[in-house]
Length: 263
DNA sequence: TTCCATGTTCCGCA
DNA sequence: TTGCGGAACATGGA
Image 1 (cartoon, rainbow, N blue to C red):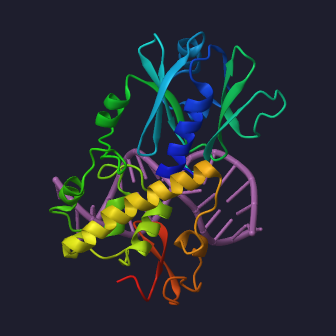
Image 2: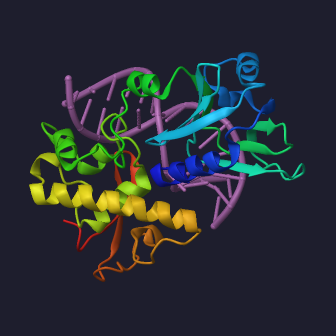
């Protein structure tokens, strides 16, 4: 389930389990996950090294490979996940790359649908620049002024803008819908007709919601029942206002919203 | 069997 | 230049 809150959770998981351990062996089980890099190069650059730190930008996870002047880059596509264990038999069914550490434990990158990417890059900053990724909404330096400037001189639907990684990096279909639901804004409203108060509501609610989801993931807790997340079905009753949940396609993605309170 | 899925990219058109 | 619809990618679950 990889949008920003999930990738943040994976980053913390990676940090907890996989840092400062010697990489004894790298197993690439399906080369289609590797993107541009050749399997031999990938394995050779990692074997014998160790991950020194991990950071996230948007939906991307980067881990520094000590002494090799390179970073592991993970993108989770639609179905990517991480699993760390010492259990030799327990490797997940859809493990595509497995890092084996010299203490016998392993970290698997699993991705059933193979839309994810595992590769090596020069540095996170270089990657972010090259792919023109927008700011991360939970970056401490990301302010309302910065957010408002992203909306200036744009005309499209607010949902399209919030989903575009070159503008803002991290939200996907689920959490854009959640943000707009919680701020009572219709996903097709165009950016140029939003009031400053509405822009502020989006900024504030989006960040509070993302932090809330991360905290709940960390605790293994479910999302609140009044979140749209649990009501993504046409005809469901809106837990906020009793209206009816509608389904539409916006920016090419199935979109759920309350036909009554989202305007 | 058919439709749908938390993502990204590329192409074509307005 | 910006915005957006559509298709493609690969696979399993309802």
